[in-house]
Length: 244
Length: 244
Image (cartoon, rainbow over all chains, first blue to last red; front, top):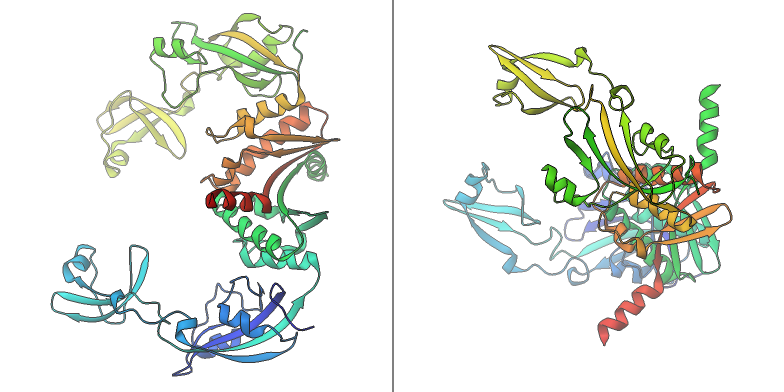
C-alpha cells in the first residue's frame, strides 16, 4: 500500500551535500565509517518516523508519500527547503579579548559555542575574529538516498516505534515494555529500568509528551498514560529468591 | 477507638534532651521559634505516620498504641532506644594537614562532613584535630511531648497522607491529586506540577516505592500505580482558550 501522510515507517537514509557528495548523516554504519563520521555511541539502524510528523526534513516526508515498503528514492532538496539560506547577519566579528578572557586561542576552523549557538571560526585578523553562526548546512543543496525499510501497521508496534524515537534511555528494552490498549486510552508500562533514570523528571515528561502527541495525532487514541507500577508480590518473590 | 499498630495517624510533637530540656525538634512553629531552632523552609504542622511504620522513633510509635485522637502523652526514651549510646570509636583524630589541604581552619564546635558522615570538632591541639562523628543525640535520654491530632480512617486520606510524608515536592497540591481505587489496585495521578520536577527520576522512584510499600503493608491493596496522563483534549482546550 502506498505510503500516506500519518503513516508510521522505518527509514534508512544517507544525506550528502550536493556540490561535493560529502556525507554528513547516515543510518548505515559502513557508510558512516567510509565517510569518517562514525560515532561510537550512535546506534546505526533504520529510524522510525511518522510521515508528516516533522521527525525528519519535511521535504523527505513529502517525497516518500506514494512509495511502498522496500522502495528506495533519491531526493534532491534545495537549501531553502533544507537548512535555509545562509544569513550574512549570522557572521559576526568578535573582539579577540573575549577569547583571551576564557583562555582560548582562536584558530580558523575551530567550533565555538556562545549563548547556546554554535559557530565556526572563519578568520583571525589582529584583534578581530570572524565567526559564522549559520547552520553548517545552511545554503547547501542536499541529496538524500532514502530506503523505506518497513511500513508499521500494528498499533502496538507504532506506539513502541515512537518510544524508540523519543525516549532518552538507550538501555531501555522495548520487549519489556507493556502496551495495554483500553478503548481510546493507551497505557504504557515501560521497561523497569526506566524507573531508575538519572535524568530530571521534567526531561522525561517532555519525551513522554512527544510520544503521546505523536500517538494521539496519528492514531485513534485520545489519552496516553505512562504507568509506573509497584507491586507487593514482586518484593515478596524477590525476598524468597534471596532466601534460597 | 484505641490506636493500634498499622493505624495512620497525625502527630504533633516536641522532642527535648532530658538532662537540660533543650528542644531539638518540634512540629510547632511557636515552640521552634522560642527554642531558636526555627527554619524558614520547614512547614510546621502535624505529620502523618503509620504506627509501626518506622517513620518516627519506634519507641514513640509503641507509646501511642492505645491512645485515641486528641490524647497527649509525655514519653521518656532512654538513649539506647533513641539514637544509641555514644561510641568512642567514632571519635577520631584527624591530622591538621587534611584540613589545610581543603583550605579549612578547624575550630572547636565546627560541623564538618567527611565521606558522607557529619562530625563536630571537639578540640584542636597542635597537629591533631579531634572530631566526634557520633549522632548529636547519641548517649542522650530524650523526652517527647506527643499529641495525637487525628486518626485517619478514610482510605483515600490514608494514601494521601503517605504521599504527603514521602513525596519530595513541597509545591505539590494534594487536592489536585486523584486517587482511584480499583479492587486491590490503587491508581495515583499526582498534581500536574509533579511532572515538571527537576529532581532525577530515580529519586522520585524511591519516594514512590516508599509510598507504595506503606500502602501495601498497612492497607488491603497489592499494587500501586503512579499514572502520568497525557490527554489530547487538554491541549485542544488550551488552544481554544488562547484564541479567545
